[in-house]
Image (tube, rainbow, N blue to C red; front, side, top):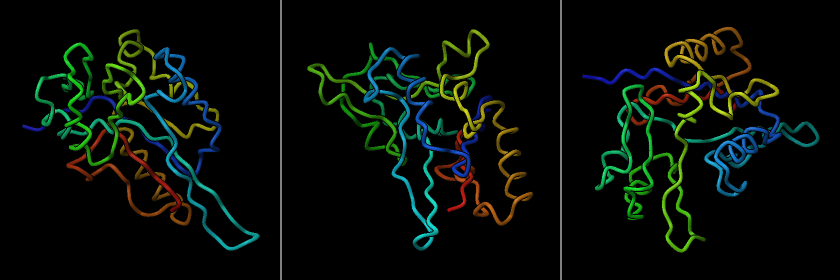
Length: 191
């Protein structure tokens, strides 16, 4: 029986201006330094020919897969999937084996290499904010609405709608819809 994903993200690379407000919001929410945020910016892509170049970036975090490989690989149950489909992390159970890092096809779990007793860090969808009826910090801080958050099925429908309504603006593929068996984070992009 397939698990029901309640929450989802739609990230639109055409709207991201690389302001990094989402990283700052994540850093503040999780009370960590900017280098230890649970979200980061993937390397930007530049298309076109000089002088008509266009640059695209997008925030990147846990994809919250429908069938998360990291959860299957975790030998101590530090990674689990909630009823809402959120891949949650329990640092008290983690032994730092990094099997989750090897298992994740999206290279999401990160290791605190600079810590003496290093553990894994990853996005938990700001579960404490969700419990208070708020959006994840990254989605709440988005000046261009590059990050949308809501019901997974609505986010997927919105992704397909954007592609259908602006066929010249986007590649005709919703990344995350089928990758790794499907995820709760979808990307639409011009490249």
